[in-house]
Length: 241
Image (tube, rainbow, N blue to C red; front, side, top):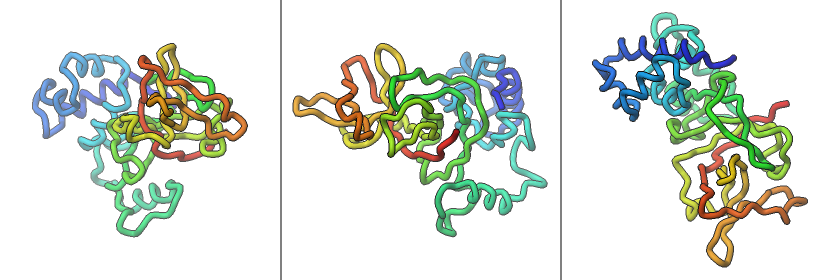
């Protein structure tokens, strides 16, 4: 499934008009932590970034309705929470304690069709949406700042940790390199592209990105002043293809 910007824009406007937490477009924009002009653009067909979608879902919109026009605008009559919770739990990659199986323990983010690389850097953009991604909050502590994206099927530098074709979350809320030494991170390079590597600190105090693949240990990525740590690779959810 692909994102339909016009359809999403119309549904954002419809949800805003019925939203009890904001009476005006300006107030609703403030709830989304964006300015009114940007919200107006989204309502008129500008492509909506993932973090705005996540925030609208947090305000109570049914993500399936928001993304694809399916189902009710909100949970309501005919929405069986216990059944839906069991469905969501069944989709999770590991067993959860009984006290973590409520529907409210889950968040839904858009899965974007674009890719990041576990090898040669690739550009990561807000592009077409393939479908909703269901994540437990334990694996997505900052949903407004989390990307849910594919890893290229051609890169093998992070195997076996991240097999080619996996789907991963990138937590943008965690980007301080001092806190991320030894962790797998997404690195945005000045010349363009995003790559996944394990962050190391050199004896000189600079940072490099190292492959996990034992056969590629001699191919580190130098992280310069104009490069940036986008965020922590929080989880590896699936291998596709």
